Length: 474
Image (tube, rainbow, N blue to C red):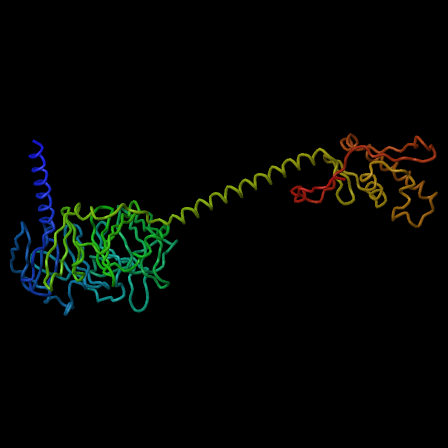
């Protein structure tokens, strides 16, 4: 029994291998004369235009019929080949759009028909061409020694390319060779070559708000792929497949413009013979491209799931370090906010404590609206009392304003001045409860007078001093 199971298991493996190889079988098309155009027909199957013939490939067989409008008879396309055009399906119709803009050709069963009335612009090479609702758009591109930032649309009313009006705000730097895709109402694009080098920006244009928005920058792991892609095709609503024909290697990358992830394979067997002179096309869960094997053209068909199996797990496009920067900024904002809160609290409590004390500012005392203006002598006496709380009368003889007077005169003047100040303080309803002056005899020497100041006085010189930790009280 086990022997039979092993036998059928090996037969199953063999059959699976045969089916896989059959799925990626190459079909020779070298009987089609150069130059030819590689497109998809109305059934989303590979088709070829060569001379006056239109070839369909279906069920492994090529069929052909004559066309009424061959490519070479179109005005203004002399010596041009498919590599000079972008292929675009839009609202069920097929178009070839000249790289650099200008010429727009409708492709159908009857052949090729030029539908524009514009000149060959030559200043939008390597732009992003896509369709949105009823219009065909072109973003960016280069030409005449400059990279452009214009968003153009093909106006079917006048059969020319016109500028699409954008609201004022953030406008990204002009670029070409950008990776881009329309997702619902947003055109998301990243990278691209600019006047300052290859950009790492990830940007979207929202057709609903009519504005650009910077989403972030490309992760360092994607930097090697930030070059000009040779070919691309849409493989899902959110994903594009890109092909790079570099000097030392060939590379395929998948970019998910919704999740902002990417995945790449290099020098894989499935792409080693890919001919970059013809587009990669995707339809019906299959990918089609032209292979050049021993100098002969072949049509290669790959099931999309089969191709996807070669790709590793997608990696994020957004720069991880940029996320760290954002987190750092948030932390910095929190720290600054916390410090500001501490300053506000300190100011509040200092102000609250100040409100309960008598303030000395300049030459007057104040408390809850009560104000006593001080003379120069009163101010000098009060400053001494604030610092010492109590003083002998003769210790005030050294005041600068009394320097030229005799001691007998100083004594009478100081007592008189203090009595007047005492009375003025008493006359203030709020101030008199917080501050009192008292003159009495010393307990050890009745001949000496002692002056007391009961209550605290705080120097006031502005709100900023409340924030200083070493705030000084008299």
